[in-house]
Every structure is written in structure tokens, then in C-alpha cells.
Image 1 (cartoon, one colour):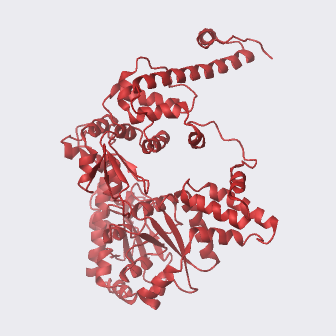
Image 2: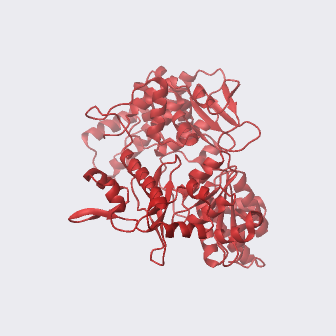
Length: 592
């Protein structure tokens, strides 16, 4: 597929890049044994918990959980997209980016859209100062109390009235017109050239994490509907992912303690002007998991700002449910409910920065809001009510990731239900009649916490020590095995057979974006399973043989069931006999 970076190129690139040298340019590293250490660049901490392994070519923070390869570091720290991170590393080591078919340099598939969106931003900004009818827009912004530097910092503009202001300025040729349509800036018209989507509106550019214009919001100057109009979904703009003001918030402070999530563009601008530059807004949608992942990459805390009425509390509950799976170590969430009749814009102007900060300090922590809302649905004075509380809380607690926060929530639930913590744990772990889970593709984390499975330990050993793949004498056939994790192990061995010099980081990059990749990342963060002085190659070979036997036993049982149900084919009969001889089983052709 044209435009995609070949995996072989990424593999070769990571074999040449030194992750220690790369990260040391951003964060001063100090040697700590075989690894390097620093204060984490992704969250505020006093003692170093961020480690970089030159052998694995992998970084990991034990405080906030940030982890990845050299590519991942540039994506997370420098806010680059994957192709740009690869290009940056390639330039560092002098590797030429691969070319598309026809010999053209490989570039971001949406480079043309970013370019036309940036030109549109510049056009709208010029119109705010130059267009004869822009006085109304400037007067509106002035009446809302926005200063010139705030308007400039957020790049506000003006879409002039008429049907072809932008199209006439940027769409003189057919290709730019097509790009204007694809970027959501123009609407196609049968039998004629497209026309402007935004007309006679104040324009709010929406920037991504790297500061690129990806879309716009537009506000009317009269009572027309809709009052606000956002760009449609495009290849570079997704409302469920982008947050208005996040780029400016990160530009104002590289070490944000929290991000405040509000609902409107003007709320962001008014609060930023009052000194709350950590404010962002969703784009006409409820906060999504993707929104919150971006927030938690920028800061350890999030403050949701909602109206104090029933609708506001309902919206807050949706935000709570979305937040639960993301409440990992160090993450915090709270809810600020506004007085009736106020929004953030009016409240900060009425109370001033200090008064608004005092209101913010009265925010409700997520755990308190959780039990407050559940408590309203039950009678806590009765046994039945407390039992109902546990049942209501059970699915919500289950969504929390393991860690201190979940343990504290469970402890608080036990206190409210007047149960011992052990009694509550027993209740929470009972399936409660839930349907059986589908067959796992990977050994379950719950099982792994008790005793690492043979497959999990074998995969972990290979991940932490990829060089042992080249020392294996005999590799069993695993690609078609139904054993959870077998296909991942088979693919790892296949990759290392062709590229024996891959590091842990290189293997992780190969599996980026896959289900197996998520499992491997967690294994890479865990301790090295190898024992000091052990013969790793022999241990790995022995583990492969045990896995091969398990795979054979699985297949033997499968053929045994088939033989009882129908006549086996000639190939199945031969395989059945071979497996019987190998594992010492007895063929059984009896049918019910």
C-alpha cells in the first residue's frame, strides 16, 4: 500500500538508533547499574522513577506507567505522529526514507490537507482585521472581554459572508478545491464549484498536539442556527479525539498539574485570559476515552467543569464512567459544579481569578462523586440498601485498573456496606451469573498474577532476550495452534529468524497497534524472568518443547473428538496416528 512505511525499514532504523542518546537530549540521564535513570518527563515527581534500558532499547516509568521505544518517545514527548517520528530518527542516523512507487519521497498521506487547513487559518485571521464587515466580529469579541493578545494566541479569525470567500481565495485550481472539500472547509455542489462551509462567523482554529490546524469551529454573530458549527469528520479531524486549547495549554506549561475540561470555546478563552491556561474544551461531544488519554498524557489530573443542575450531573456521571479505566497510578479526576445560571466564562468574570480558584478547590473527587451518586439510589440504613449498593458498584469497580486507587475504592465500598474487606473481595470476584468469557487468545492477567503460565514466561523470556532465538536448535510449528499466546510466540520467532539483531524495542515496534502488542508492552515493563547464571538458550529450548507437547495434546484431543463424530480423512488419520505415538495416547474411533 503506497504511503505506508515498510516494517523492514522501521526494524533496520531501530537497530541503528540509540534510545539512551536520543532521550538524553530531552531529559538528562544518569547511569544506574546497567540502565539509566531520570525524573520522568511525563509527570511531576521528586525522585527518579524513569528508566531507560540500552540493552532492551526501551523506556519505562514506574510512577506513571509511560513506556515505549525511541519512536514512541518522540510520539509521546515531542507530540509527533508515527511517520514524523520515523522520519526524525531516520534523519538522525542518515537513513533515507523509502520511496513510494514511482520514486517519489514518502510523505504523510494527509500532508496536503494540513497545508490547505493552515492556509485557511491564515486567510480567516487576515479577514478579521481587513474585511469591511469584520467590525461586527471584532465588536463581539471586545464585548466578551477578550484582549488582543488572547485573540492572537488562539488564532481567532473571521469567515466573511458570501458563498465563495475562501473558495475564491484558495480554490482557483481543481486540486485545491478537492482538498478544501476533503478538509471540510467547502461543500461540493453538483454542476459547479464548491461553496464555503463557514460564512459570516467568528472562526476558532482547532489545533492538534503538534500545533497543526486540523479543523475549525465557527460562531454566528446573530441569532442564526446553528449558533456553533464545527468542521465535519475528516482524515485529520475527529471530534472524539481533539480538544480545543490543548496545544496552547501545553505550550503555556510543559509541566501541567491538571487540565480543566469545559464545554465551549469562549469558556476556554475567558479562563485562559484570567490565568487558567490549562483549560480545554470538547467539541460538541461528551468526553471520550481518547480525549482523556490525551489529557492524561499532558497532566496527571483532570477537572471536569459542569453545570450544577440535573443535566450537568448526568453529564458528569458519563465522564466518570469514561474515566474509570484510565485511573491508573498517579491519575486523578474531580468534578467542579457551577452555580445555577453561570458558565465558566460568566463565573470567572463575576468572581475574578481568585474567586474562581476557590470554587475550583471545592471540586468533588471522583471517588466521592461515585459513592454520592450511588448512595442516592439506595437506602443505606437497611441491609437491602447496602447490598444493592455493592451490586451497583460492582461493574464500576471492575472497570478500574489494578492499583492503589482501586484498592482504596474497594476499601471505601466495604466501609459503606459494613463489610470486611475480604468479604467484599469475595463478592466482587464472584461472576454473579455472568456468561462465560470466550476462549482467551492470551493467558489471562488474573492467572498470570498467581503463577506465570508456561506460555507467558516463554514469551517474556524471548522478549527480554531476543538473541536466544538464534540459539534454538529446533522450533516447533505453532502458527496454527489454538493455545493462547502460541501465535504471538510463533510470529516473534519468525521475525527474529529474519532479523536476529532486533532488540526488545524493535520487537515491540513490530507489534505496534496490535492486540498482541499491548500484551508485549506489559511484559516488557515487568521484571526480567531470567534467573542469574541460568542457561537461557537451554531454558528456552526446553520451554518450547513443553509448549510443543501441549500443542500436540490439544490437537490430539481435537482429532479424538472428530474421530468419535465422523470418519477421519486420510490426512487426519495419519496425523492422529503420529500424535498417538508422540504423546503416548491411544486412538479411539468409537462413535456415540
